[in-house]
Length: 240
Image: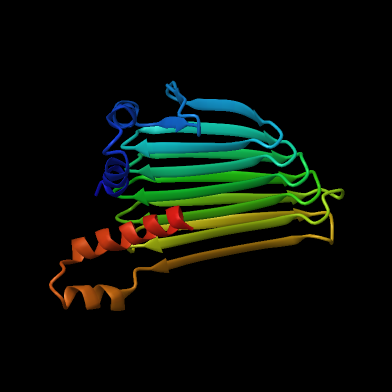
């Protein structure tokens, strides 16, 4: 349906140079400094984020075959990581993110949004390891699956004994537009300190038929209803 591609096109309509890079390379990593990396078929990177540094990463995967992306981050004091993964129309996409919060008051936010059609598949694995005091991590994964597409979410939160006042949140939501689509969520919590906040939530549900009925009663066809739902989910995760 090109939901993500159309979104990126609208956002980058005034930056033709950036859009040309996205369109030609399909999978891209960009930082807040607008530095672009031209990845090989698979991406693997180790990144240390310095003290008081804010680091943004965007991974865009559109119409790919088989790709693997692995990113390892180490955060120092007061450093901030924001990672956004947007994927659509990928035959098989394996994304592994490993974050070590080694500095006090460091923070990590990872968002994943995947649209699957036909026989598309995404395996998203994320580990957030709290090694220092007062570190914060937040994970949101949303998938919308149609036809016979598949999505797997493997989430791990580890809070070390010395990491007091840590705050870790993890959420996985899946919407199935077809009876053949499949979504699984596998959380794992390893908490070694009582003075922390830690939560995990997961939902797997079908399309809201009442919403579809409401839109179709006003002249919207079923395919357009699905598109509107996907666009709404995309907007929700980007604006959250």
